[in-house]
Length: 237
Image (cartoon, rainbow, N blue to C red):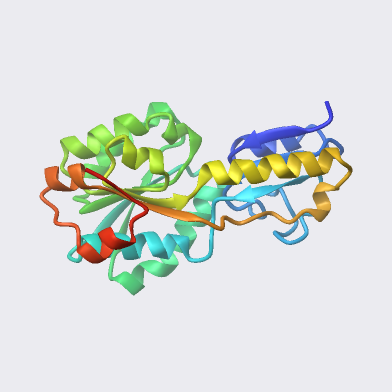
C-alpha cells in the first residue's frame, strides 16, 4: 500500500507499529505526542501526521459553557478510557482547570463497551450534578445509550460532537469534524504527490461548533441564557 488513513487515537498506534516507512494520516486524534505518534505538533518527524481534536483551552471552554448554562454546578462526572493516552491528557488538563470554576471531578473510567453500563450506574452513587465525556471510539458507539441514561436520570450533559446534541444530548462543543476530514484528504493528496509526513505539521482545529438542544433543556427544566443561545452555531428546538 502507498498510504494508511486512520481515525482517532486508539487505531493510530496499531497502524504505526508495523511500519516506519508507509505514510500514515491520522485524523481527529487527541494528543499525538503523548500517544507516541509524533515528536511534536510542528515537526512530527516520523511517518505519521494528521490532525488533532484538541484546541487551545478547549477543555476549559467546555467547563465555562457548562457553568454558564448551570451556574450552581459543583460536581461534574467525566467519562474516559484510561487505555487511551489522549483521554488521559484531557483528564490531566481538566484537573488543572477545575479549581478555576469551583468544580470537583468525579472520574468515570470505562475501557470498553462492556464496562460502560456498570461505570455509569456506579457514577450515579457519587451524586454528579452534570456529565461530560471524551470522544473515545468505544464510548461513541454507545452515545445513544449514554444520552438515554442521562435522560432517565435527569442529568445535564456536555458532549464533544454535534451529532450527540442532534441525537438528544443537551449541549455540545467541539471541532467541525467534516472540515477536519477534508483537511486530512488534502494531506493524503500532498503525500501522494511527494510530501513527507515528517514535514507536515499536526493540524489543530480552526472551527469549533456550539450546539444547544432546547428540547432537552426544557425536559430537564433548564433555562438556557440568551447570551449562550446567541453564540450557538445551531439551536435544536
